[in-house]
Image (cartoon, rainbow, N blue to C red):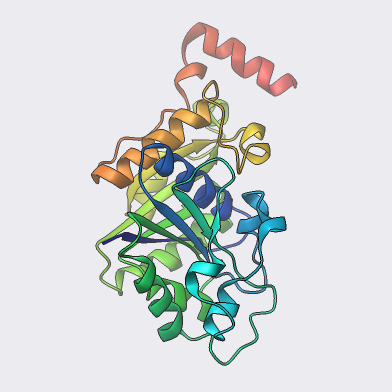
Length: 262
């Protein structure tokens, strides 16, 4: 049976869908069968992020309304035979969009895959509760700024009431130069503030935004960060990528100066 993991956030714009996509890619690269389910009705873009939007014939709403079978709505990744996307719908207006029906879809996918990653709507409206009710584990994505952390704290409090197997925190868009200069909260400080296990720290790199659907290049720091995140999800460990290492010491101070001047 698959591990069913919901990827959520307290607010939009923190990179939740990007994290879902790259985590799915990394887990599939490890040899696991992975399906990513987009249940962010109305603001769905997982298929766009993965570069398969032109291959979508049916979506999850078609499955819910009985216009196709679940297998017909799955879109295979262009590069990986063991990675699939179940796209959402920009309308989402159907009486069949209920927590029970969506959960049934997730349960039907579970015997076929090793991981079901559920891309959840941001915030804590009905879509959030619908997504979380389908999951065994949760990943909360936050960025190192006060509005994101405040909203993440609210989400984490609600998640704990669901008695999930695990709730993990991913700090996205961390700037090592700013953390060393004490201009940005460190991941360890964020972990203490939110009282939640840290399962991933992802550096801010432009390459992440242009490589979705292909995968982060191995030469980038983000590749190692996502690889560590995937291993933590697989092994229930808590090792995280050190975004500050190249900004420490004498040469690190030079890099920080160059970073500020760019």
